[in-house]
Image 1 (spheres, rainbow, N blue to C red):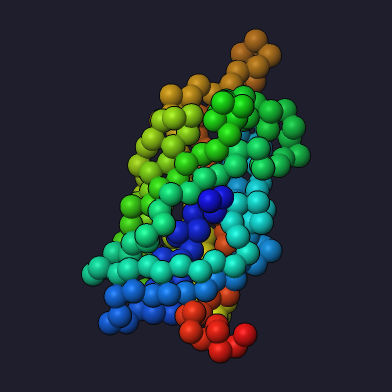
Image 2 (cartoon, one colour):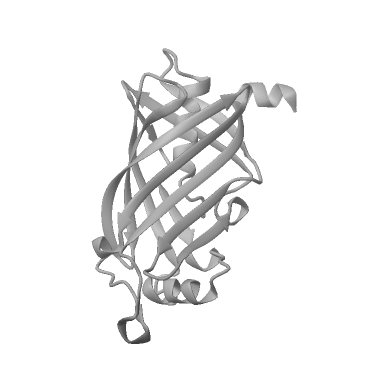
Length: 207
């Protein structure tokens, strides 16, 4: 399953289309082309960015059922994989260093596991926080990812952004040119998604 953080998509979509008394929500999600995963970093000389288009890490159409317990949302499918070699960058040296840093030949995927999403009262804007386990090079760390949501009819956009320290995964930032070029230990992970969303029964009627 190569659907990076698709769990977040579904959980936040639920707050928009089904924030009601029901306990489970069968949904169909149509993921748009603008969806993008980005990792940003910097050195003492230059900033760099790695991008992965949505079609590389998530299926175009997703069918899933999520459950709500109080202010928390859970999914039966919680384990995801991010293909490391699908990232692209204009800075080829930085991308090469990144693949070397995360040992992409030995660990070709990064593992993501969602525990739950804690929902706020608002359906858009700062909609909630996702508790996620991230595994890189065999090391697992837990983070809270804030999620922002925008809605226009059945169309939903959401933005997940957080800075993490690569030393959390026992990784050492690269150093080049006899110490003159030093990469910062902090990187920012940013997932932007745009989707159409509706309950499965409504989607069947439209089709």
